[in-house]
Length: 282
Image (tube, rainbow, N blue to C red):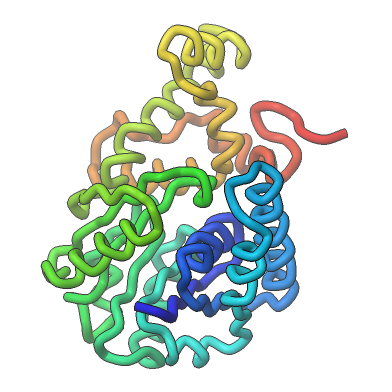
């Protein structure tokens, strides 16, 4: 497992590429948007620079990690990968189409993993001729700092594929935890209803945004309140996950809050748009 293909150069894809490069792997980072690849490279360089400033990484190790990172403009370049992690938009149709392509361009023995936070691994596996080698590898944001990786076993995923993913996760210095293939898996099955309920509490005037976040920080010892966390994740991402859970589990308790849906419709997506529950920037 020396050459890792990472598809998608957004926040998650960049973070995943960075941790693999730091762990000594050669990384092929692919994105259809060439400008996005340039931004990802600069972002990774800045992130590694912070590790150097804090004494957690030597300048030589930073330079070595950057040297192992290669942009891949064409997806066919992933033919050289020994293992693939997909980190594109949280859309079943987009991921399904990508897995069909990956099945064509990668070697038959290569494991194809998805960083999806809620979408069925079993269904993604049907896009390929190797469902036994398709699994979920759900990193937490920010990837370079968070140590958990949720590993999701699809209906057809083999024990050997899961063992390879566990070993690779450990090589990254992270902790693998296995989850079954249910909507939301473990992390979001618990987290998203809490965030959704915080939006209901805000919509119904139970408390202000500051009050809701403060109660969860000081009363439950959470590092940040659920509304601040939603802004950090992206309100559109939260909505997409809740919709997958609501549809997949069929339980009304997962119904997305109308306020959350209205904010997404208005383009108030959180930190990335400059405005969500809170406002950011000038």
